[in-house]
Figure 1: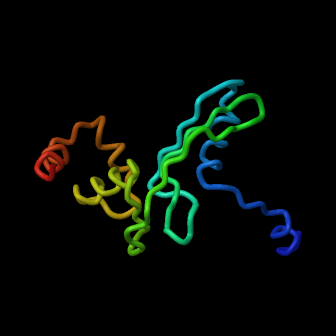
Figure 2 (figure 1 turned 90 degrees about the horizontal axis):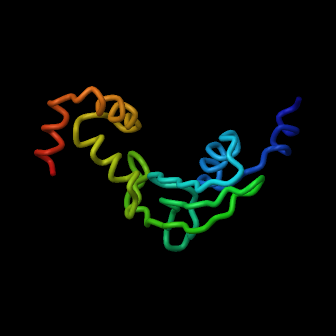
Length: 127
């Protein structure tokens, strides 16, 4: 298949809708609440630099219906996109404060159940 053919078959969708779809459709549920919490999703308002940060959907049958969306303003682009008004952004900030690098939030997840005391003390000192 040629690159142009692939490009023509590509369909761009909303970032949070992609997350919600990947959770709901393979779940096997016919009716479900779907919550997406992210550092920053698709840009919703270019003029005011607003990106989606939290989205709530109702999955029913073959449909995902958007119920509510929270937006946050982009406050920094470098070295990574940072958006205010987001739980994902808070999680990223804590990850960086305790010494992990950008995009290493999963290490934070892994450290939690292991009860790394030095990390916990570091978080408490910062807070």
